[in-house]
Structure formats: structure tokens, C-alpha cells
Length: 373
Ligand SMILES: [Zn+2]
Image (cartoon, rainbow, N blue to C red; front, side):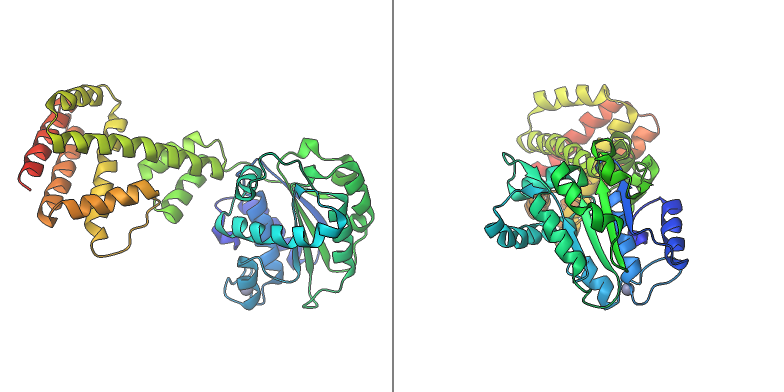
């Protein structure tokens, strides 16, 4: 994880880098933010920066051995603690190493992990989760060991609000006075639920929610989401990147179902249903009309490409299936024709064509095209 991978938050990034440059890294830092914020990624990017062997003034290199190991969350001097069901002392070691595998799986796939993801990946739905007194013992043991590489040793405590008073009290001493070159990054999503014994011993780094335009550009640049859709999703996400991912999926599902239904009616030449769909289309807002056609255009474009290359572009499984079936059910020539018809319809709408008639004409052209197959 590099700072560059996280949109926005330049003030916090600069602050962290300058703390490192001036040799003034607080030994216990509390990254606080809402679920889906940059609190965890910022802490991880800072850990990467600290341990990177070839860093610049701005960021970690992303290429050196340490950067690579941190990306896989397997650097021996970075340790993670997180809520899990309590285990008997004799079962603790196994439970610890089992959960570590799951943790790596979660946090390498999702840069903005949150508790609900953690619960679902582990099937913890009916379990009582906590950072237990056994975890505190493990923290103390970890702190007392020498670092493997002789450099910094960094302990992450993810969701420290899951420590109860007895587990929190057990680590107060090592939290306050850790050995040299030992750093704690606590990542909280509910600052108000933290024990004051913890907050009073940590330096607070308050991570604000993402701004809409930061989410928008992240979706466009990293997830290849079309601009218009990214803007809509960013607006619904309330500053949370994980909420944005969820919205993306549900918007995608609705758009997909509509498009699939539309194409099905064209194949079957169900004119009654097509007339109804045209009415519905006519009643939508201009930007919704445009979105619906652009969504279709994107799927057709992907279907055209799917014959030659692997398609990504943030499609879910259903969409991928449709893309490949649609591609093989239609000749290249008719696919190009569909693409052209959709693009023309979009530009007609821009020139104020009647939306209901445009949609119906488009549907009739598709009916004819599919008939000729
Ligand atoms: Zn590096």
C-alpha cells in the first residue's frame, strides 16, 4: 500500500511523512475514521513508508522487498491484532494463525476492510467478537521480542474498541512505554467507544470521510467505472469507499436486470412489453435515460472486446456471463450495428429527440436485427 493508492488526504500524508523525516513518529497513533474511510489504508501506507528501503520524499517505492512483503501482509515485523471469538489458552495459537490467514485474505483484497466484511469472510455472524486478554498477552510477547530485521516493529490493532477493560488494562504499560523502535497503529471506527485509558495514551489522527470527488475519481481510475455512474455512486456513498463499492454493485444489478429484460423482449418481439418499457423510459430523468443507454453501450462494447481479450471493468459474474453469451449469440456485424444504434440514440436524445419514440424505434431496430440472425 502506497500513499499514492489512497485518494485525497494530502495533509495527513504530509504530516506522517514529515514526522518520519524529523524522527518524531509518535509511538502510539490512533487512526480514527468512519467505516470505509482511509484510516486503515493510511496506517498501512505509513507502515510501508517507514519500512521501505528505497523511499522518496513522497512515498514508498512499492518495489523493494519490504514493500512487496507488506503488500502481501507477510512482513515479519508487522503484526496484526483484530477482534475474533475468544479461544481457550491451549487453543489460542492455532486460532491465532488460522485467523491470520483470513485477515491476509481480507486485507489484501479489500483496501477498505470493515467489520462486516471480516464477519462474513469468517462466518462469525453468531459469534461474540473481542480483542481478548489472550490477545493482550500475545501483544506483550510480540513487543518483548526483537524485531526480525532490526528495524521498526509495528503492531496494528484493528478495531481497538473491541478490547474490554481487562484486555486494555493488560497492555497499558507496553502501550505507554514500548521498547525503542516499536510503534502501535490503532485503527478505530468508533472513537467514542474507546476506553479513555487507550485514547489518553495514543496520538489521535482524525481521518475525515472521503469527499465525493475523491471517490468518483478513484472509481474511474482504479475500477474503470464510467464517469457518470461513478459520480452517482460517489454521491450515495457518504464518504465511505466501501459503501461506494456496495452501491456500485446494486446500481449495476438494477441496470443489468433492466437491460437484460429489454433485450429479452426484443428477441421475443414482445411489442406490448416494449411499448410499456418505452413509456417508462420516457418518464425518467434525462440523465437516467442517458445512463441506461450508456450502460447498454458499455455491455455491448465489452461483448465486442470479449471475443479478443479478457474483460474486467468492475462487472459482476452475471454481467460477465451476459457479456460473453451476448457476444457469441450475435455476429460481429450485428454487434457493431447494435453499438451504432445505441450511440445514435444517445446523440439523438442529446439533440432533444422524444425519449419515448427514440426508445421504441431503437427497440424495433433491435427486433429486426435479431430476426435476421
Ligand atoms: Zn519500498
